[in-house]
Length: 282
Image (cartoon, rainbow, N blue to C red; front, side, top):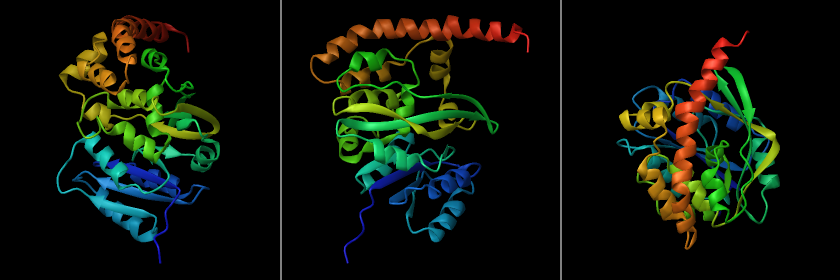
């Protein structure tokens, strides 16, 4: 008998995720759309992640658990689960997030011929409380400058649903190289293949907590960037790498604008808003 090919492959890279991974797995296994495989790549965790994942893999045949012999690094682990996928569509799933039960159904029902990927709405949660709801803008194929200069939650698309073949093509130049800011550059490059669309009615709950990879990996230069608006050169370099043809010149000319806007937001606007908020009557 031939092996069943699921419509969707979900890739979950994880390292030391025991605190939240049960909630993440439960919400994925509760999806109304059931034709998927779930590939978990454990990046040599040293907590209870392995035991939890093996428990779930025994309970549900759609789960495939792989444990790495040593830590590959974050982006290499993202690449691993994509390489292992066999579905028509692919989605990265963070081990600490939660999805509404109709998430996959809404994505698969609404993804169109011209789309490279699709996303829904995001709920940002902290300490199990919703702090805001948002969604990224719709980005049309080839609109590289618009995406590059946008600050409207565009990185959320990394957790959307993509056409697997297009995502593999779009990640050839960068995934596995452990560069900071790879999500923005990767998504920028996906605009070569199609639109990045948004659909309502389904929610991805993005959990904010101190153990997130963005916090764990934040060293001196990352903190320096967040403090004064310095955008790491690697992200600009990879953005130029994935942008095709004459568009490279456009992106190159946009770098000073992007840097200036980011510096203004992080070094001036954000502290000002925090100061106003702290003095606002509750």
